[in-house]
Length: 263
Image 1 (spheres, helix red, strand yellow):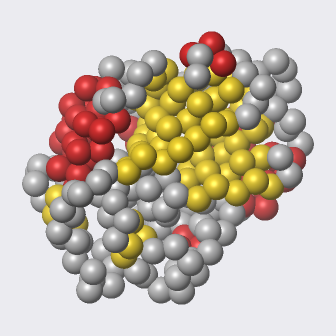
Image 2 (cartoon, rainbow, N blue to C red; image 1 turned 90 degrees about the horizontal axis):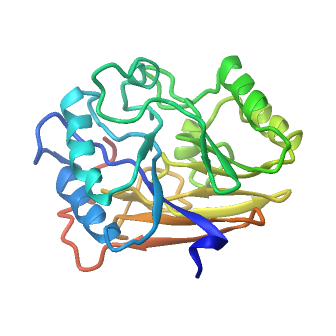
């Protein structure tokens, strides 16, 4: 595929790092699994940017974000992040001394990418404030550019009842806004540790696996999947379509604790 047909971004999500490298979550060394995923992603060529879709950290510590930055910089592309429910979202607005890029409207090819904050401090579910909805309204202009919206929480149900109790709580407002904006072609989220893609009224809703442990799709209660960590490749095409694929590790020993019922 010619690079002139589109621009390539990689989605990396839900790494759940700690202030101390080597610490485990559900049996998984989250720092080691992120390194393995990034090593795999280093085979990608002509990458325009990395979209890190929340829960980069498990404890919100500056040390965990420095670890994340040190690992992903080997990809040789700008890293853009949004906060998840485990992150310290203050860094999204006050990036002084923070290792990752500050909030910006990304323009690449004929695409515009908007980074959104759906995190509610202390809560697992998400919400887009009035100012965030206004941010979309202002920047998702119906001009020559296609728009990709990026947030942490899923705006539509993913089919797992326990995860859908932690969805975007004002998704109706969000979806109604999308309907009014013809330039919006896709919505990208993290949070659910699953790869899903669904199209609604011409808009693609896309999620990606975690770089550590995965959640079993379509379950009523918390359940860990045995599928491998990975990342998502997105080719944002000039015609507004998206060519996308999930790339996973193979033969990686997660040391997963399947009997654990939460985290």
